[in-house]
Amino acid sequence: MTEKISFRSVSRTYDVGGQPFHALRDVDLDIADREFVTVVGPSGCGKSTLMNIAAGLVDPTGGEVLVDSRPVHGPSPERGVIFQQYALFPWLTVRQNVEFGLQIAKVGRAERRRRAQHFIDLVGLTDFADALPRMLSGGMRQRCAIARAYAVDPGILLMDEPFGALDALTRVQLQDQLLATWGSERRTVMFITHDVDEAVYLANRVVVMAARPGRVYEVIDVDLPYPRTEAVRLSAEFSQIRNRVWRAVYHQTSSEGASL
Amino acid sequence: MWNVLAVVLGIGVWTALARAGVSGLPGPQAVAVRFGELAADGTLLDDSLASLRRVLIGFALGSALAVPVGFLMGWYRTARGLIEPYVQFFRTIPPLAVIPLAILLMGIGETPKIFVIFLAAFLSCVVSTFQGVVSVDSTMINAARVLGANDAVVFRRVVVPASTPFILVGMRVGLGAAWATLVAAELIAAQEGLGYRMQQAQIYYDLPSIFVGLITIGVLGLIMDRLLLAAEKRLTGWQERR
Ligand SMILES: Nc1ncnc2c1ncn2[C@@H]1O[C@H](COP(=O)(O)OP(=O)(O)OP(=O)(O)O)[C@@H](O)[C@H]1O
Ligand SMILES: [Mg+2]
Image (tube, rainbow over all chains, first blue to last red; front, side, top):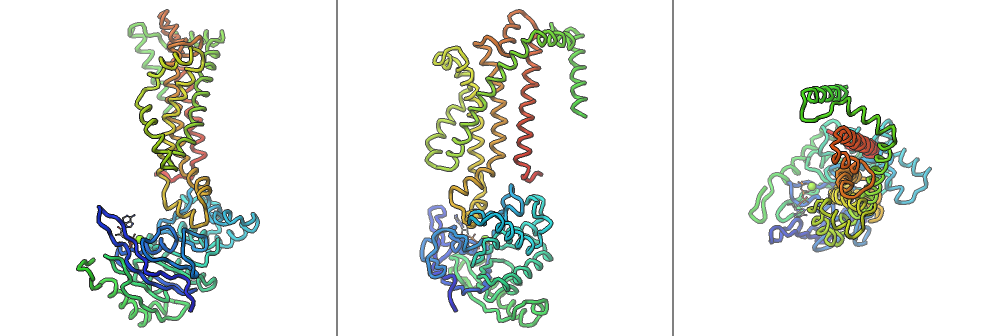
């Protein structure tokens, strides 16, 4: 198993009113190539911080992150990020949003157009390719953000509660779509969520984090076959793992007397 | 539809007031007659062109400088630290208060008038542009960076379009400020222009001419504002509106 992303005793402290605040302390985590890892944990335990460090948008105050054995310095199109707030460019159409990264990569016009169309079709936005983001529903915006990230063909996808704001039905559809493309294109995915079911349904491994200081609390393997189907979702094994994750998230034994 | 009604009502009230004999107020008819006279002998057109020219040059120079300076202030902390105190200081001085100084330094030609208008437009527009750059959503910038954008690309393709609505609002405010300053600048030293004409009319107690001047200024200002509004609609139609 080759490591795609390695967190090596990563720490991040913030100065809060003169006091150091440990958003993350000594996080060690290896994510294998083509693995799908989900991260859950109580609010404020440092999930977004961890992901932003991997993305190169936030610098760690201690330790380092290696991607393909090289330390991360700043963002790179090799690590695609999907933000919770979609972060589409509202002045660009769906197609222009999807072509944004390709333009920066100086992909030729025709090829750019073709690739963008492919991913727009893939996420089911064919009829809205020339619409502006303000005309799209939340789920459609998120699909556009996914197409935009896919289009530059990153080896790694970092997703921060991407489906958090969506209704249950759209959420399930996007989960299945995500798994389908992950299955066919085989990227490494780090996916943050606060939904225990979602964490188990998607992942090879679930990383449970704890707060104060932000740290890895427990890593739980999900030995369920892909493709994940409704049958898997309703199986006894699934609910067993789900219960384990649930307990790890909601009944954490606190390390510094602080509890959440 | 309602606008038309409002205009009709307004003229009605005006007529009634004039009929009632409010101290020397000319009725719409008298003003219309004077309007015809001034339009026929070309005075009105010449005055309007002279005033428009001053406003447009001052406004164009003011916003042309305000946009890059606003961007500099928003983008570079150093630039902001260096420029902001001056902008804030000069903003507290009404541009009209600069007129005496401008006349002393630049004479009584076109330069001081245009300069004062320029200053008014610049100060209104620069603050708004700066606000626009500062308030660009940082996730939007991060989204561009993770797609491979360097600082130059982030600036050109995210910061500029994201702050366009602010710039256009600033330009509209700047245009209003330019008009407001124009008349005062012309009241002081000019040989032609709508403000000058009104001052002359004041000397001769020629109320209809003053009304013609006022209405012309109002209408021209409204037209220019509407043009900018149309540009704003076109350029910032992507915005979500409540
Ligand atoms: N710029 C900052 N300055 C100070 N504190 C910060 C900053 N960014 C994050 N923090 C703190 O670090 C901690 C972790 O934040 P983070 O956003 O990573 O949490 P999270 O696990 O993603 O939470 P959520 O589930 O609510 O999104 C929080 O307590 C937060 O207050
Ligand atoms: Mg978060």
